[in-house]
Amino acid sequence: MSFPKYPAYKDSGVEWIGEIPVGWSIKPFWTLFRRVKRNGHAEKELLSVYRDYGVIPKSSRDDNFNKPSDDLAAYQLVEKNDLVINKMKAWQGSCAVSDFEGIVSPAYFVFSSTSNNFWKFLHYLFRCNLYTSYYYSISKGVRPNQWDLDPETHSRMAVILPSLPEQKAIASFLDRECGKIDALIAEQERLIALLAEKRQAVISHAVTKGLNPNAPMKDSGIPWIGVVPEGWDVVTAGRVVRVISGFAFPSDKFLKYGEGVPLLRGVNVGVGKLRWDDVVYWKRQIDDGLDIYELKEGDIVIGMDRPWISSGLRACLKSHG
View 1 (cartoon, rainbow, N blue to C red):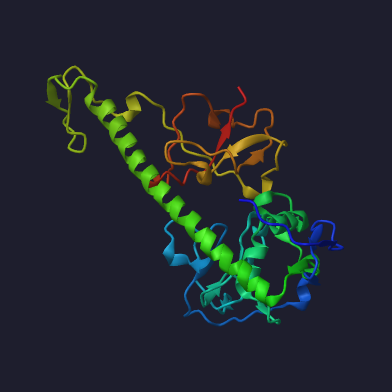
View 2: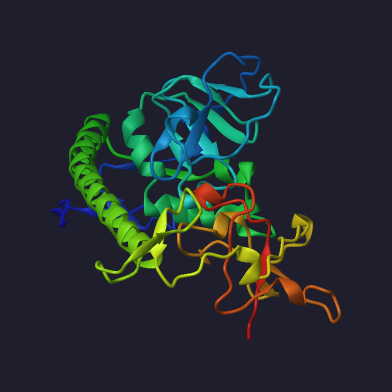
């Protein structure tokens, strides 16, 4: 989508922002927000900050397996229009202005607005690529999945501010256009789900019933399998594979990219495939006894704790062989 140019631009004075339209201003974050810590509201609804959805009730998603603390007294109250930041994942876009009241983890940053700027504009602003890239630059740590946002540097972050009427116009435009895009995505996701279901049905039939629709069948002797073609055998898994439990690699010894071999964890076990886009690494030692945990081509990986949702594997090493 192309946008018309403004009549004139000026240097923002901030290197990572560059030019902004004449009439827009730049203010430091600390002049617009005040960090708040409202504890003792354990009865309120649990909220989470998602990269794709913003601040939403934790119960509205079935893919969040982070277990909340048994004692919610230290959790922080979030009021509507508060800015909530997951300080370890701000660089991934886990930053949003809340449309809900509820509580979030003590590890989050919660900010209350001290200005009259339009909250929905700021919601879109802090989640755009320019700001997530800046969050990336000021997040520090040994491993990306445990990086931390530096509060002092963040407080001086430059915030782009059009006039209030223009903030509202931009937010309304984005609500409208993003709504259209989200509707298209939802339709495509429904189609993908139907195709995935059909794909799974084709696979299941081929591997349990064969390709010949006229083949004589026999009872497998296993209720959940039913009938199989005559001439096929049904045996226990132990007769065709060697089952090896995963190993609990200590997280304090995980390494960053390039310092060892990729380490497969539960989060990397997807439905029908392994994900290698968010891995940690492990340093191999001579005679460390870990050869048995090296994955080789043709190995089968099953989540030990929750195989029905394809997760929960403790860890295996990816072989370079």
